[in-house]
Each structure stands twice: as structure tokens, then as C-alpha cells.
Image 1 (cartoon, rainbow, N blue to C red):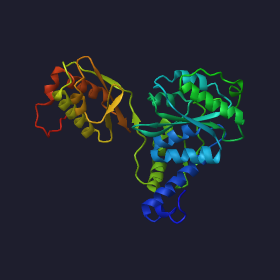
Image 2 (image 1 turned 120 degrees about the vertical axis):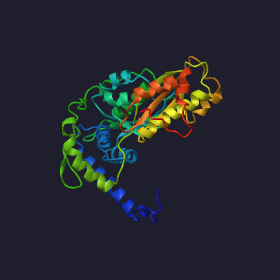
Image 3 (image 1 turned 30 degrees about the horizontal axis):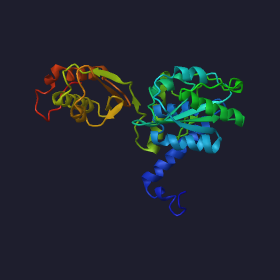
Length: 335
């Protein structure tokens, strides 16, 4: 617990005061949007899309509202095996009309993510959860109460499903007022910091909401939107060996890409492990002809992924020298 003498230290500076004020305002606005059938994960991801909150606000908001305020039951699991297919999970939990569900996942690159297990779009965005990574599920209701036995059963069943175990679903989970419909899960208009109504994000009214979103950003400070990661793309090695020349070609290709798109980041994976230094692919000496190197792109507005994949495929082929015909410090104009 924070020592009482220092718990308000972050208010000493203007930046600290403004960031705290912005967080309190965001939480107040979110609470104002909540109704009995609202899912917090849907609301938070909508706020992230609009830039009204930041990624590092998600964890404290989830705990403050679901655990401290609404007393949701919760449980966590570190997966024993990687999970890449979520259709079975969605097919099962979408029937659980007795409870509201909110899940969180600490992604190794994107950080703390929140998702609605009944929202198939949220599950697709997770892409895959690796072995030993942690997932937490919160079960409860924003209004009224959920039987403690039912909540505990939902937590246990959900974690069992994630772990690939068969679990008999109690009938008490299947009947209730929390039947989820993505078309009807829209938030009510709320007040911005400037006192103007702000409607939920929809394609047709995004332009109209820009002004009110910007007003909130002025209070919270400039902040990036939510980062998203693409699926993993495969690049086959067609050279006889992924050697130093291929490594240098890849470094130049990625440098060209990130120079053109500074808000984006490229992640490289090989045999299930993230490669922080591309030189390691050459030093290992085992990335041979026929191997596949995977990559993904993370950022707010991902572009040119197909072109990046095409160049990386060439860089992993005998034609890698095409990228090495320029001085060492030259940034190639590829994108």
C-alpha cells in the first residue's frame, strides 16, 4: 500500500495532475455509459479506437470497476499449450446467457489486452496465445447479482476450455439475461469533458466525433491510439542458407519500412521464438533452405504488409544482393 505521505506525489507537476485528471474523467465517462447489459471490454476497446484512453489505463480500470466496484468473480491460468483456434471457445461461451464475461491477456509485445469472450471479433484479434502466457477471466453482472456458485462455475469452465480440457457445462450458465448481440451492444451517448454529447464509434459518425475526441485528448495529453498486431506471415528461405548477406538485406528492408512508417514495428519469429536481433538467425547457422521465418507488424495504422512480405521473400532468396548495391548507410526507398 502507498505510504500516506507520498500517495499524492504525482499531483505535484502539471503533467502528473493532468494525466490523473484525464484518467479520472475517462473512468467517470465509462461508468456513465454502463448499463445492465453493457460489456466493459466492448466499451474499453471502443475508447481505445477513439484515442480517449491509453493502453496503460486498461488494467487499473478493469480492476477498479469489475473487482472493486461490481465484485466480479475472477480466475487466471497460464496455458499449458499454445492456443491458436478460438472458434470452439466462442461457440461454447456465447451460450452462457447467465453471466457477463470479460477476459484479459498480457501480450508479450502489445501489453495488457481486454476482450469480450462472446465477441468473435475480439477473439480473432487475439490471434494466438502462447504456452505459459496468462489469461484472466472476470464473471459477474453490472446490475443485480449473479449466484456465487454460477460465477465460480463459469470461471472454472472457461479456464478449463482454454486449457483444452473437457468440462460439463452446468445448465445454470445457459439461462439468463446476458445473451450477447454485437449489433445491440451499443453504448449510450455520454458527455465529453467539454460537456458535449459523444456517441459510440460508428463508421458514419466518426467524422462528427473528431472534435469531441480531440477535446478529451487535450485534457489527457497527446497519446497514441491502440496498437494492433497483424497475423504472422510466413517467409520461406529459398537461398541455400540464410547467411550474412540475407541478414543484411533484411535489415535494410525493415529499415526502409520503419522509416516510411515510423509508427509501426516489425517483429520477427523463428521456431516459436521472437528474434530480437536478426543477426542471430545467421549465427544460429540452422536456418537453411526450406525453413520458414515468420513476421508480424504492430501499430496503429498498418500498411504495406504485402509489399514488405514480398521484399523479405526476395531478401531470403539468392536475389538478396539486389538490396546490397547501395552504400551501407543508405536508407532504401522501397515503400
